[in-house]
Image 1 (tube, rainbow, N blue to C red):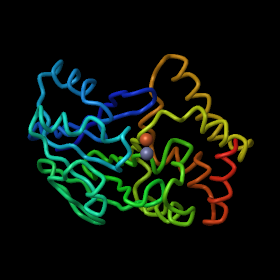
Image 2 (cartoon, rainbow, N blue to C red; image 1 turned 60 degrees about the vertical axis):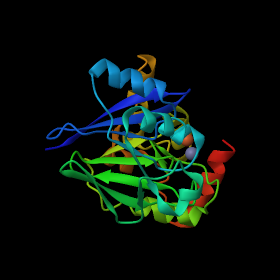
Image 3 (cartoon, helix red, strand yellow; image 1 turned 90 degrees about the horizontal axis):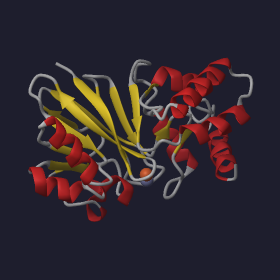
Image 4 (tube, helix red, strand yellow; image 1 turned 90 degrees about the vertical axis):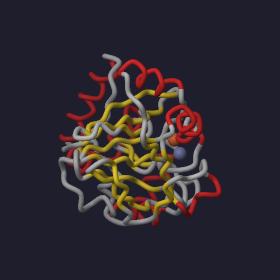
Length: 241
Ligand code: ZN
Ligand code: FE
């Protein structure tokens, strides 16, 4: 039994993620910004939709949720602390909650910073981490509501996950993040190799995601920040980059 994932591009640079559980055929989706691209993929494959997992309340992550629930009778999962600003939740969750997805499950990790109610979902079956706008490839989300210290602590919550885990995040921001990362660590060989790979992928019109946490640990200047202060300085520098 395992969970597999497929990116569905939405809006200009968002990714929603389609999940399939192999034993029961349960289907889930992470952060549907829009309903139409998801419906197109589901109809082409003759699939229904069971669960809608939301990481945070921004419109580019929840915009299609209500319509998808109405179409498929799917259940919406989200942070109970943010219920007032999310679509109505069928499954309100909190730190440490395990959300059943067939025989697999998603563990909820509270990761305040981008927003205060932001959560991530970790599927141990399939080794998938859905980080929304918290951690991007070679980058991190903007601090709209939380502090650098909160975001640093949120990043630290991913540190016990295996290197093999695939980071599935909310946006294709990789190329612009790569330029900033190179300005911080111009001599990092792993970073230079990843930047080359990213350039090849984008030139071919392909997604740079998902990416393993092992690669991110070797290349992401925010994971590599030693202290909350350094993390905050880098976030500020990226805002003005
Ligand atoms: Zn956001
Ligand atoms: Fe976003």
